[in-house]
Image 1: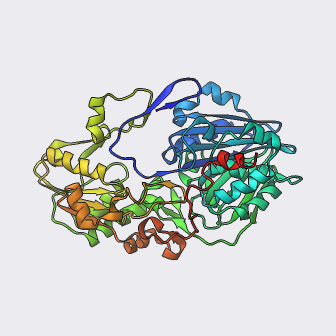
Image 2: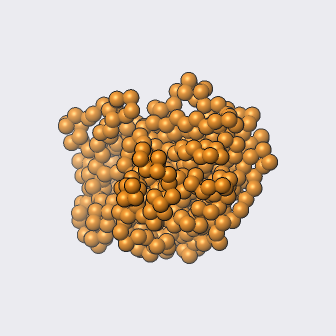
Image 3: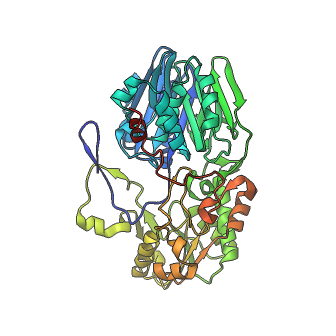
Length: 491
């Protein structure tokens, strides 16, 4: 339960377990002849799957920056009247799911910071791994006034914003280029001053970021699907270790680091929209290929292949095509389960997964079913799903997963469970099968997943599956998580 600034309480509808969540979606636009706030609204709407806790938009008319942000979904926060007040020629936007810093209004983005040479607004997707060091550096250089009044946010985004703003005597562009090499971890960010749109991506390109072109402007977004929604043509991805600036003189680019690509492989499995392009290939195509690979690696005699919608649908299509087993829709998903202002009763809580999914008995009854999903995290959802399908009359239930077992947490911007909570961290596949109650269980191999992406494994981050982290993670994982505590040491 969360209390909004306006006093309203928000509640989270009960689910057996949360799916893996990406921290954020970011969007930026420079377009003097367009309604930039509305473009940003629709861009964030297209990126809503990347963050559903809060959202915000900052715009500039060349003289001042205005920020509007709140808790909730994009469609809940912004009205037509709100967007009409956000005028200007450039804007950035953000939708958030927290992995560092609590889910409160103060941590909603974009962040905003005034300096002697202008105002800085910033939005970020990812997770820094050296926030402790950065926060201590920041604590040593921020003003006594800031220490006295305290900082409002407790996120690594606030640290980045404050460090860039604290570079005395430098333009924001020069300040960013001075700060970026100090950042470790995963970050794809958009930021702005009164006149210029900026964007940057970490040297490993863990989280996605793309560039699009309007007739008279530019767009930067987490995914290419957001470009499609606002009518921008895809130009290219922001490169690893690249910094870009966009103003009336066009787009200029600087590489602040040597690229060392380590793109997140879980974007292909679940996080990205299926209509998004990654490395020039449609994500839906990759997921269908994953399903086909899964059928090759784990065949079974069955009567029907069904997906766990929506995330399991492309892989189920691929499995059915490869295996020759008919494809069908055996589960109906309630698309409107999510944030609500109404607290569910105890009776509704106990229904658990049925809030999201309900079986089609006429389709399932008397059949041997292959159920395809993208991943298993704690196992609670699959356990409830198998039980529900048996109650609907399925003769056999064969679970197929289009990713390898998730054994390790992510420190680069995905909210997985802790290692102690990950079912595959402590159990072998046969033990997981017994735990969820399926007749058989098969995961696609890591080699099969990599092959389906068409990207070399050396250019991918696969840490959640094999524990091989490409970017050093801090020994003390709590270090720097609360910026206020660190800064207070220096008061």
